[in-house]
Image (cartoon, rainbow, N blue to C red; front, side, top):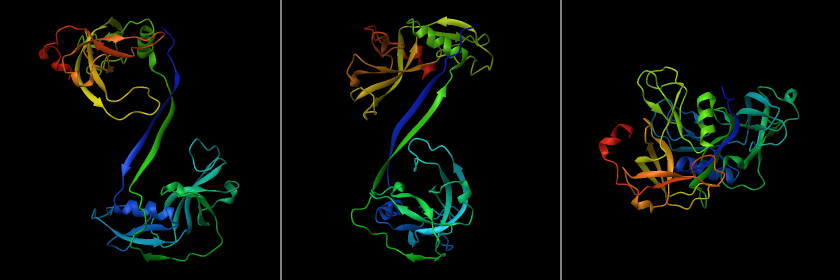
Amino acid sequence: MPEALSAPLVVEFPFTRSLGPVQSAFLTGLRERTVLGVRTSGGKVLVPPVEYDPVTAEEIRELTEVAATGTVTTWAWNPAPRRGQPLAAPFAWVLVRLDGADTALLHALDAPGPDAVRTGMRVRVRWAAERTGAITDIACFEPYDGEDTGRAVPHDGRFADPVTGIVAPARLDYRYTPGRAQSAYLGELAHRRIVGERCPSCRKVYVPPRGACPTCGVATTERVEVGPRGTVTTFCIVNIKAKNLDIEVPYVYAHVALDGADLALHARIGGIPYDQVRMGLRVEPVWTEDGRHPDHYRPTGEPDADYDAYKELL
């Protein structure tokens, strides 16, 4: 049995979203060193604010300014900060109920060690030197000796040049181990062969193989070479350029049912204008020099496949 592969993998993308009036006021307020919450019909002040009451589901818009000081309600020590976290040195993750608020805000507390942190301790916001209208405008919390002011005063939420949208980076670092079936599949790809596995019960061929039939739930071990040609079953046109991906937009990403396979795989379609890609288009893989997998699929020049030949693979 071949050794299972293992490799580090990073999934990273920017998440872009627009802001409604409540979130816009909250983030713009942070830029201006003002912390805003929202008051529910029951009188509770929620920080950070939400647009709908979590109890009644009614829309809430009554903004309230609270203090930049508060009390730690619970905490956990972080001895080894990771990339992108608020502080480079060890710190505590804390939930802080700001004075005037009824809920707690999660952020970092700058403390010399876990012995210096306790539930009930008083803290205050340390503002970032440069603020842009993001949660990172609060650099962290720091210990504070003052008393609870209970401050909660109405605020109209109006600021000059309000923040109307944010881009939040999302990143996941992990080690991926594909297992026996997919390790063998990747090994064959390195030799420019596409190999799936056949279910001993339903006889369907799955590419890439999972090691078990998703329909019958039985193990699969019989290897079957498929393709290399196939048929476009469905597709989409990508108009947003991905970070660190050297492909000009627009381009087409499609499901391709390889000849002999009973499951369509994902692939980019090239060698044809994006607006000429269609369901039923016959394609073949294009390999780059030293490539371990097809770079993209291109038209073969064959007549389009009949719909009945791939309708079960949509």
